[in-house]
Length: 166
Image 1 (cartoon, rainbow, N blue to C red):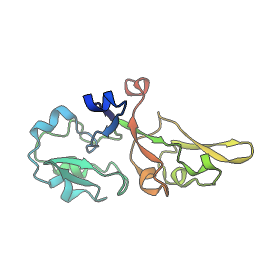
Image 2: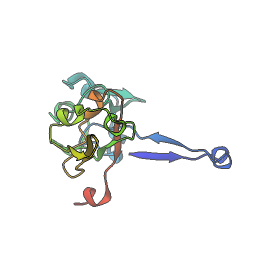
Image 3: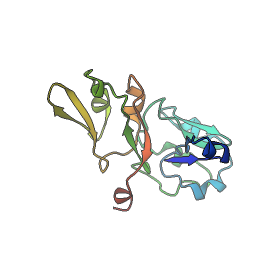
């Protein structure tokens, strides 16, 4: 879910910055957000405490913890914001950055251990620790690997097109 914002000034300076779109609770579609009144019921009923309001709209902070897809936010929302009653995945997947410890010769498999669906696997390599690979089709985007990563090498990324429409 990454959007590139390129101003004229940054274009001429050959600079760009990536802005990350906010992560909405599972089952919320951007077009349905116009019905959101910002009442905060989704925030109060989230057992993981990862839903908050930003600019009067619900957002999920996956750096604070994982989404268990319990559906409490959808069940307690008085407005028709949630298009799916019991969503089981987000529209994004997780990306593993080059700053991941195994890419630098340090053994770490915290993300694999935290992943509830087994979407992160580690591939052996000669002369170093196993390196992570993401099975995008298995990734629900829950964020369990984001909060646990000691170096912040996991983040939200757009789901590959062939997986989105599968």
